[in-house]
Image (cartoon, rainbow, N blue to C red; front, top):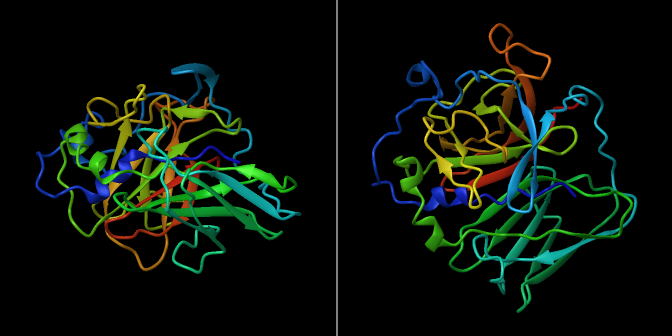
Length: 307
């Protein structure tokens, strides 16, 4: 199982529009002039980090040796039962009863679920998948919680019993977050979010993200604005003047996205350790075709782009 990305940035989808002013747009020297202010060219190569307890520790240069190689995804060979807890994102001891969990094949979250479950009084749930699955997407819904989506989860194809904890975001937490980036949200627009990890599944610092209309090109969706996180004990989205690219935890979000009738492309770009940021072109290190749903946040585990 890949690490989940349950970002409380999802709360931004439910925030009222009347809050604060504009961000300073300071992604770089010319950040305010960029089509997406959060897509300013980094001045550093990508670096790998891992979390030891509550501390992020630098591992070394990010490993992109698998970039562009054949995917190692393998369809499952056995019935796989995924079990776990539905619990509050902020207070993980608070389990959520009667939450609805829907599972989808691949990233087709607008299609028919391939499995559903309702969490028990102790927050536990379980879904069994037939052989042949590869990637799974989840939607978690509960009273007083925002709908929370998670895409791009991969499970060991030969292991029958595996785990996944789902952590939706409460409406009460949602109502506290606009102050962190001091932005107004436009009702009806959507949010995409994720975390970038290298070929060793380490979180990556020094990358930038966007949502593109076109695969393999940074053809920014109109209105897209990217923000990055503080990487503290409670990682929070921060202004671009504080963090202009992914931090130690690899987290990012893109807001102000118009709903799309077809998939757009969630992209992560950066410099590999053998590149020179002063002279080389950015490298596309991750890409995932995803939908955008108005007033909804969709998060994804982002990995090195494979063939």
